Image 1 (cartoon, rainbow, N blue to C red):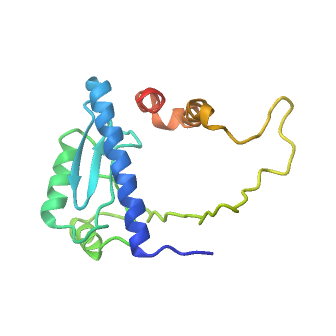
Image 2: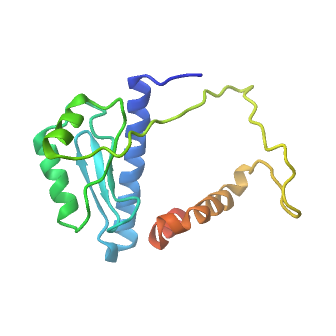
Image 3: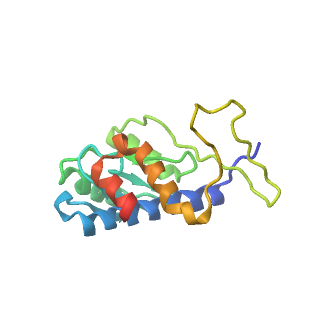
Length: 173
Protein backbone atom coordinates (compact mmCIF):
# COMPACT_ATOMS: atom_id res chain seq x y z
CA UNK A 1 0.00 0.00 0.00
CA UNK A 2 1.29 3.46 -0.88
CA UNK A 3 0.92 6.49 1.35
CA UNK A 4 0.96 9.95 -0.11
CA UNK A 5 3.54 12.53 0.87
CA UNK A 6 2.92 16.25 1.27
CA UNK A 7 3.92 17.13 -2.30
CA UNK A 8 1.56 14.64 -3.92
CA UNK A 9 -1.23 15.57 -1.52
CA UNK A 10 -0.67 19.27 -2.28
CA UNK A 11 -0.84 18.64 -6.02
CA UNK A 12 -4.06 16.62 -5.71
CA UNK A 13 -5.73 19.10 -3.32
CA UNK A 14 -4.81 22.10 -5.48
CA UNK A 15 -6.03 20.30 -8.62
CA UNK A 16 -9.32 19.66 -6.80
CA UNK A 17 -9.45 23.35 -5.81
CA UNK A 18 -8.78 24.39 -9.42
CA UNK A 19 -11.58 22.11 -10.61
CA UNK A 20 -13.95 23.55 -8.01
CA UNK A 21 -12.99 27.08 -9.07
CA UNK A 22 -13.81 26.20 -12.70
CA UNK A 23 -17.16 24.72 -11.64
CA UNK A 24 -18.04 27.85 -9.66
CA UNK A 25 -17.01 30.16 -12.48
CA UNK A 26 -18.91 28.11 -15.06
CA UNK A 27 -22.03 28.08 -12.88
CA UNK A 28 -21.73 31.87 -12.54
CA UNK A 29 -21.50 32.23 -16.31
CA UNK A 30 -24.28 29.81 -17.29
CA UNK A 31 -26.63 30.25 -14.30
CA UNK A 32 -26.23 33.87 -13.15
CA UNK A 33 -29.46 33.62 -11.14
CA UNK A 34 -27.67 31.24 -8.71
CA UNK A 35 -25.22 33.88 -7.56
CA UNK A 36 -22.39 31.35 -7.86
CA UNK A 37 -18.89 32.74 -7.36
CA UNK A 38 -15.42 31.86 -6.14
CA UNK A 39 -12.68 33.46 -4.07
CA UNK A 40 -9.02 32.51 -3.73
CA UNK A 41 -8.19 32.13 -0.05
CA UNK A 42 -5.45 30.59 2.08
CA UNK A 43 -3.76 29.00 -0.92
CA UNK A 44 -7.00 27.30 -1.94
CA UNK A 45 -10.42 28.37 -3.14
CA UNK A 46 -13.85 29.11 -1.65
CA UNK A 47 -16.81 28.24 -3.86
CA UNK A 48 -20.39 29.38 -3.46
CA UNK A 49 -22.90 27.44 -5.56
CA UNK A 50 -26.00 28.05 -3.46
CA UNK A 51 -26.90 27.62 0.20
CA UNK A 52 -26.73 23.94 1.10
CA UNK A 53 -25.01 22.88 -2.13
CA UNK A 54 -22.30 20.26 -1.64
CA UNK A 55 -20.18 22.41 -3.95
CA UNK A 56 -20.37 25.33 -1.50
CA UNK A 57 -17.17 24.97 0.49
CA UNK A 58 -13.54 25.96 0.70
CA UNK A 59 -10.92 23.51 -0.49
CA UNK A 60 -7.13 23.39 -0.63
CA UNK A 61 -6.58 25.77 2.30
CA UNK A 62 -3.17 25.47 3.91
CA UNK A 63 -1.72 23.21 1.23
CA UNK A 64 0.75 25.86 0.06
CA UNK A 65 1.67 27.37 3.42
CA UNK A 66 0.29 29.39 6.28
CA UNK A 67 -3.39 30.32 6.61
CA UNK A 68 -3.73 33.74 8.27
CA UNK A 69 -6.43 35.37 10.35
CA UNK A 70 -7.05 37.70 7.39
CA UNK A 71 -7.62 34.64 5.15
CA UNK A 72 -10.17 33.29 7.62
CA UNK A 73 -11.88 36.68 8.00
CA UNK A 74 -12.24 36.98 4.23
CA UNK A 75 -13.52 33.44 3.86
CA UNK A 76 -16.07 33.93 6.64
CA UNK A 77 -17.35 37.14 5.00
CA UNK A 78 -17.51 35.37 1.62
CA UNK A 79 -19.82 32.62 2.91
CA UNK A 80 -21.80 34.52 5.55
CA UNK A 81 -22.63 37.40 3.18
CA UNK A 82 -24.37 34.83 0.99
CA UNK A 83 -26.24 33.16 3.83
CA UNK A 84 -24.06 30.04 3.74
CA UNK A 85 -22.26 28.44 6.62
CA UNK A 86 -18.50 28.13 6.52
CA UNK A 87 -17.44 24.67 5.41
CA UNK A 88 -13.86 23.69 4.67
CA UNK A 89 -12.73 20.39 3.18
CA UNK A 90 -9.46 19.70 5.00
CA UNK A 91 -6.44 17.59 4.29
CA UNK A 92 -4.57 16.22 7.31
CA UNK A 93 -1.39 17.34 5.52
CA UNK A 94 -2.41 21.02 5.49
CA UNK A 95 -0.24 23.64 7.19
CA UNK A 96 -0.71 23.57 10.99
CA UNK A 97 -1.86 27.20 10.92
CA UNK A 98 -5.24 26.08 9.53
CA UNK A 99 -5.83 23.98 12.64
CA UNK A 100 -4.72 26.94 14.78
CA UNK A 101 -7.20 29.21 13.01
CA UNK A 102 -10.00 26.69 13.53
CA UNK A 103 -9.17 26.43 17.24
CA UNK A 104 -9.00 30.22 17.69
CA UNK A 105 -12.45 30.61 16.12
CA UNK A 106 -14.12 27.72 17.89
CA UNK A 107 -14.58 25.66 14.73
CA UNK A 108 -15.16 21.96 15.05
CA UNK A 109 -13.50 19.55 12.66
CA UNK A 110 -15.97 16.96 11.46
CA UNK A 111 -13.49 14.99 9.39
CA UNK A 112 -10.16 15.14 7.64
CA UNK A 113 -10.28 14.15 3.99
CA UNK A 114 -7.64 11.73 2.80
CA UNK A 115 -7.06 11.32 -0.90
CA UNK A 116 -6.49 7.74 -1.98
CA UNK A 117 -4.63 6.85 -5.12
CA UNK A 118 -3.38 3.92 -7.08
CA UNK A 119 -0.22 3.99 -9.13
CA UNK A 120 -0.93 2.93 -12.67
CA UNK A 121 1.38 1.55 -15.27
CA UNK A 122 0.76 0.23 -18.76
CA UNK A 123 0.42 -3.29 -17.27
CA UNK A 124 -2.02 -2.30 -14.51
CA UNK A 125 -5.06 -4.52 -14.66
CA UNK A 126 -8.28 -3.35 -13.05
CA UNK A 127 -10.66 -6.18 -12.27
CA UNK A 128 -14.31 -5.92 -13.12
CA UNK A 129 -16.86 -7.49 -10.73
CA UNK A 130 -16.95 -11.28 -10.84
CA UNK A 131 -20.67 -11.55 -10.05
CA UNK A 132 -22.98 -11.60 -13.00
CA UNK A 133 -24.81 -8.33 -13.63
CA UNK A 134 -28.59 -8.17 -13.76
CA UNK A 135 -30.26 -9.38 -16.94
CA UNK A 136 -29.78 -6.88 -19.76
CA UNK A 137 -26.85 -5.12 -18.08
CA UNK A 138 -23.46 -5.17 -19.75
CA UNK A 139 -20.25 -4.09 -17.99
CA UNK A 140 -17.42 -2.94 -20.25
CA UNK A 141 -14.87 -0.18 -20.59
CA UNK A 142 -16.14 2.97 -22.24
CA UNK A 143 -14.36 3.94 -25.43
CA UNK A 144 -13.08 7.45 -26.09
CA UNK A 145 -16.02 8.16 -28.42
CA UNK A 146 -18.36 7.33 -25.50
CA UNK A 147 -16.82 9.89 -23.13
CA UNK A 148 -19.90 12.16 -23.20
CA UNK A 149 -22.24 9.23 -22.52
CA UNK A 150 -20.02 8.01 -19.65
CA UNK A 151 -19.88 11.51 -18.13
CA UNK A 152 -23.65 11.88 -18.46
CA UNK A 153 -24.33 8.57 -16.71
CA UNK A 154 -21.83 9.37 -13.96
CA UNK A 155 -23.46 12.75 -13.34
CA UNK A 156 -26.93 11.26 -13.27
CA UNK A 157 -25.75 8.93 -10.51
CA UNK A 158 -24.96 11.99 -8.38
CA UNK A 159 -27.90 14.13 -9.53
CA UNK A 160 -29.84 14.03 -6.25
CA UNK A 161 -26.80 15.00 -4.17
CA UNK A 162 -25.54 17.74 -6.47
CA UNK A 163 -28.77 19.39 -7.56
CA UNK A 164 -30.16 20.37 -10.95
CA UNK A 165 -27.85 23.33 -11.74
CA UNK A 166 -24.68 21.40 -10.93
CA UNK A 167 -25.90 18.43 -12.95
CA UNK A 168 -26.61 20.73 -15.91
CA UNK A 169 -23.14 22.22 -15.58
CA UNK A 170 -21.50 18.83 -15.61
CA UNK A 171 -23.50 17.67 -18.60
CA UNK A 172 -23.06 20.77 -20.76
CA UNK A 173 -20.55 22.97 -18.90
